[in-house]
Image (cartoon, rainbow, N blue to C red):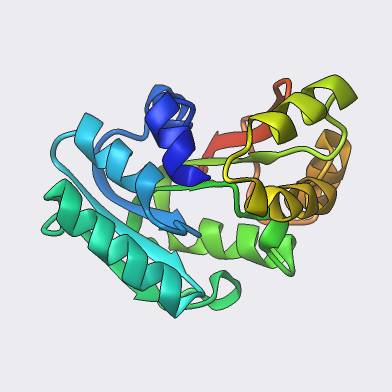
Length: 196
């Protein structure tokens, strides 16, 4: 599905760049097959990406994709859990994540970890689906999904995702204080800068 989104230009790459994440050492949380981070690297210069994923299979696939993109010198994939990131405090200039928020077992703790590993003044962008999207849009999204065998996974992801209010409530209990929490027709975004 991520490959199809990439091929149609539907990834959040431009939103991430517009949020100011376009330089330095950046962390991607939950890269899956790695397409978003690789597309981001293609569109930026003087950037390096470290991507953290809990799945060894996804890391292996992402490494293969990075090689195909010719970007394996600018990206490294790390096996680990976002609940306890294997990085020192204030390591990254920015953090982004797309499509994995609904998979986080304890999102408040992950937000706290993002806050911990971000440098002072560091930027972040977290995007995901939202459970309360319009039913017609949900139907359309499901109809556009190919191969059809992944539709149950998409439906499960939608059902596991959050509403805007739920995310705002979780963020209020975390150390990560967003500048902007917004929704679009099918998703939501959390955008901000770590206070100096």
